[in-house]
Figure (cartoon, rainbow, N blue to C red):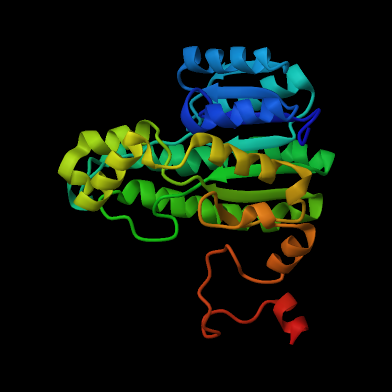
Length: 289
């Protein structure tokens, strides 16, 4: 078992990708804290985790609220005595359509949940991980993080910001053996895809067509995304930090220790502008020359 004896907090664990990750972690030997805004859903997830022979704690949590996030981590430590893994999966789509037509409150809510919620969860769990000098943090990114996604400005901007947050945080905590990575799960059939269909032509014809194909079963499975989440939480990914990994497009299954060392000497899987005008070579790049 790749995660035997470890404790994982998973937000947005009541359905979709978060639920699949909870199941995958349990099968690999981890105990799970399942958090989401709908308690009945995370309670069901925890019942399924228990059926797999692992302990589980369901919590109703709005990740955009400081006090609820702090309580989540305190409850996890009280129940299990430690936290080894944090998966920031909770997310919302936000308003769909041209930016100038977007509802302001919906736009802000998307940023609060997707970005601010990720920040709050990291902020709450990192002090413990630093003290124990180990930890794995996985932030869900994806659509719009690496390319423009018109008609989804709040979602795209918040998810792109999650990648930069991942990179910054990874640098801050790497000396404590805490690794922070982002993952792009691909087009998984979730409530977000259903929201896109509901938006109709406001989503843009291309995105609408893609969502229709996903709903019909043509997308990526949640289990595939969960498989990447297991890799990023396990010892197999030790040394890999500050990266955005795609479950669909990146060859992460062949990331051996040697390959990870090579990746960390370069700017692969990061947000960079490589032109040697605005950014001077990093220290490690200079040493290679």
